[in-house]
Length: 305
Image (tube, rainbow, N blue to C red; front, top):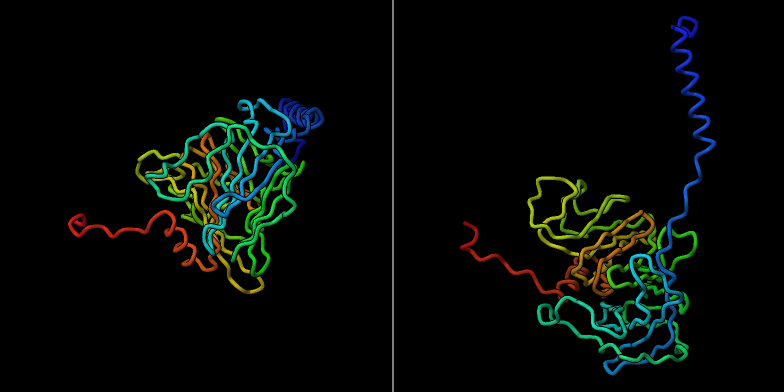
């Protein structure tokens, strides 16, 4: 039916809709940039610890009260614990914070936080090399990267800039945030336990909330019984497959935002306690991961009914 057959009322309605859409498109303000929650930290000292690791102190650049005040001083602890496992631990430098109990999950304890951090110039070395993984850092704003020694590929990089959709390192009493950039070709698996429609493979812009609820898996996008903040990253590098794992040892509730080219942790407490497993095969990652958290035990025969 042509427009000439429309009634005057319909004509007026169409004109109103067109006029409204034009006015709305002209008057709508541009989308605001995401609010920066923190201003980052700077590394003010770094020295060798008694157990062969490195202990550093971070100082907040400028305080910010969004989600509460920033913790002003942080302790950084870095150690290549085995040939294929690197640990990066960040906590309050002046007060003890909640961590997964060391008697429940036995592992090496970092040096106790110093009550009065030493402020001095950072040591000149900017990277610490292990057998399989290399740790490097930028002093201000503090960020760190982990890369594979064999092919130089970066497997974790927490640096950010003004164009990044995430913040620099944020460490408040009840809000912690850190991010890593990722190649879009990487395939990520893990971050359970939940009922994602795609299974254990991570898909960009899907919600990944770790908050144990002890409920059945009958509904999609629901948190289930356990919390496993670990993922495996699988990549093809010049035709050669590589896999590595990243574990955040933190039992607090958290959201993990995967955008396809970055991944952001937003945690409501505790500490940053990262473990990086070099792989390079998926089976090797699982072996290195269970070497730390404990091997799976077979179910007793009587429990099978």
